[in-house]
Length: 104
Image 1: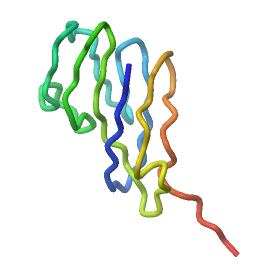
Image 2 (image 1 turned 45 degrees about the vertical axis):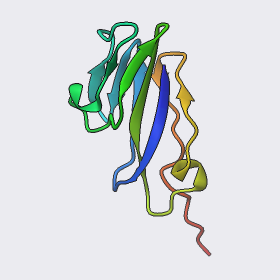
Image 3 (image 1 turned 135 degrees about the vertical axis):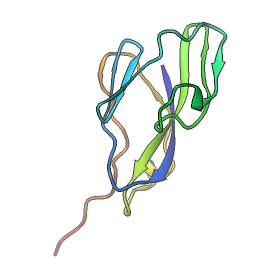
Image 4 (image 1 turned 120 degrees about the vertical axis):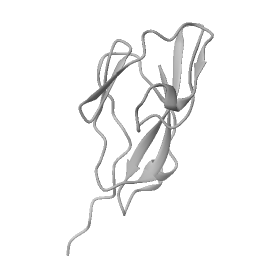
């Protein structure tokens, strides 16, 4: 599964995990297993605010664009993220929500 991340300013970070072809976004599950090979669905077809672009399956690989919440001090790796290739079940490591504040 290939996840393209689309940063957006949010007050709550995202916790994301995968089980098979089911993604869980902050407790909300989305089963993508019914999408046939060669199909492309618009984001609104799945009813999730986390999906912000089309979902497609080509040669068996799911590709989707998801929202990536960013804190007010998000680092460059979060504001300009690289795609994530998911190869196993479990938590998905996302770029940091924001830079750690430095205290004197």
